[in-house]
Amino acid sequence: MNTDQAYPEKKFKAGQLIFQQGDVSRAIYILLEGELAVIEDGVRIASIGEPGSVVGESAYLIGCERLADLKADTDCRLQVVEDVERFFREDPKRSLEVARTLAERLRDMDLKFLELRKLTKRLGGDLPDEERDLPEELKLVRSYLKAWNVSI
Image (cartoon, rainbow, N blue to C red):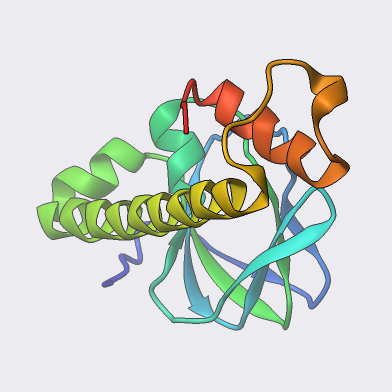
């Protein structure tokens, strides 16, 4: 993804927090150099090392709190984009690139969800209505399915 010098660059040292889970999103970031770690509830869920990668866009676009911490794995340079609408208007291809990235993430989540459903069926099929009837390993699965309003 091309970057624009109209947006300021910021350097982060290895281990430095870029944004925190629960923060209100006020910008998106473009990785220029280095590697980043995405950490949710203390668990590393992703690494980002591709120059030009856009990070933090989901929370910004939806207008919700950040779902994970973003830390510098190595010394990093990031471009900070606070005027996101301008950023996308200046080069509409950026919007398409971000849309593709979000679509890939959604597909990955769909595939993980399907695996979760298969696992649930292998572990005992339909989940009983009462929590006390569930083995421990199914309690988390049931809570996700219930939150997503999905029957198996």
